[in-house]
Amino acid sequence: MGTADVNGSDDAVRRGLVDGGVGKVVTVAVLVASIAAIIVGATIWLLLTDPVAVANAVETGEVSPLVRQLAAVLYDALIGLLGYF
Picture (cartoon, rainbow, N blue to C red):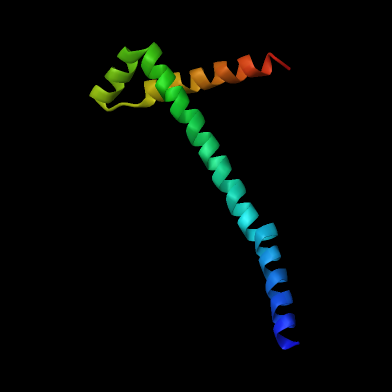
């Protein structure tokens, strides 16, 4: 009987971890991965569409024009997506 109680408590603890802590960690990991994928996609798009700006940013080490263009690409993509709604 003592073993059954321990197993029942173990199951409750496992369910609590899955529902609470692990679920939150998975949510944060998916959010971070999604943001990283969006930034990587925009960077690749910018590299393909405006390689001179990327080359200049790499050569001079100044990333502000690159970041500005990345923001413009992301903004245009977001506006395009919102246009469907």
